[in-house]
Amino acid sequence: MIDLLRVAARNLLRYRRRTLLTASLISLGVLAVLLFVSVAGSFRSMMIGQITDAMLGHLQVHRRGYVAATDNLPLNLNLSPAAVEHIQTVLAGIDQVTASSPRIKFGAMLSNYKETTNVRLTAIEPEREMATVPLLVQRLKKVKSKLLARGDLWVPELLARGMKIKMGDTVVLVVTNREGSVNGKSFRVAGVVEGLSGPGGRDGYLHIEDARELLRLKQAEVTEFAVRLDGLSSLASVAQTLKKKLGSKASQSPMPLEVHSWRKLSPFANIAGMIDLLTLFVQVMLVSIVLVSVMNVMIMAVYERIREIGTIAAIGVRPRTILWLFLSEGLLLGTVGALAGIVISLAAIAGLDAAELTFAFGRQQDLLLQPTVDGATILFIALGVIAVSAIASLQPALKAARMDPIKALGHV
Image (cartoon, rainbow, N blue to C red; front, side, top):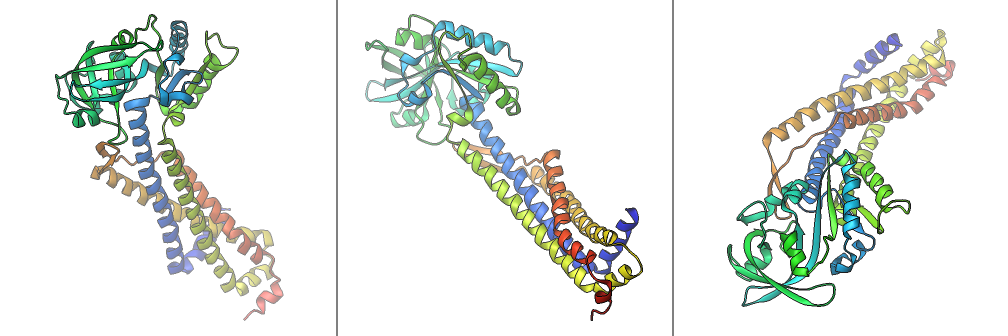
């Protein structure tokens, strides 16, 4: 086999210009794919991180039917204290869960004594919420304290600007509770929070105990649990475990529960899916480039060396050996092109990383682009290029192996 590779390398070097051009084309394809994968992967990871770490969490647990009616923020689908205790017990038993935060979500009317408008509110336990969504603090444009205190309210930026609400102002929240009675309570404006996805955000924050008092909740019920994991790699397994322990009929939960990942809760999951689709499309383009390039070179090699093939066949070289000789040439061509492309790609990715390029996502500005590519992706692309090179060489190699020596020797 080593002798065959040596002969194959010598044959490729006989046509240096053509070999160099083909290897360069393969390297260019590998470079384009790895650069796209690294840059798109960086944007995708940053986008997911902004969504999960600044608002949603990796997973959420609700009472069954809540997500379908989430636009109405129904209070009659809150989790009971028994369900809350059961959820916390289950989450405590899963090693991949690093933090969880109970929330109460509801709609209210916000008044600054001159104007009144509707607002969506999320009531939180400040320390647990910051541990679950640590990037929430980055959404605070103005803030008295990073931990929300009793009696304080974080107002959405849109309403603060439109109603000319300033830090330290007193505002009133008026709500209708589950029984239909109306209640109001005054709050200090202790922060202005910007919307994650654009200027239309109307989501404010207050302390969970203030929400229970405002809504006249007699029990420690909550709307949802946001869950943070040790990494997105464990998302599928933890979600499956939680569904078995919380959502199945065999679970010990006092009420039917549902577990949803961030993908089910955010429209940005479609963008992540589009990025994955584009990555697949670019990889298909690479396969096409390699296939056409190598097949063209090998067909030309067979055509130009017909008499040579007839000569070695006439002196007793077996068809199998001729087949492997041409396959070896295709494999060497693909291997050299892939390795060169990988080296150039890693250098280009390192250069982009050192350049510290930034981009904007939603209202978040100056997010640092950190293109990276893992070893598994590099190995997959390299093996794919080599495999496609071998496949592209197969038809010309079979043609060479099946030639009649007499006809080949007589070829002009």
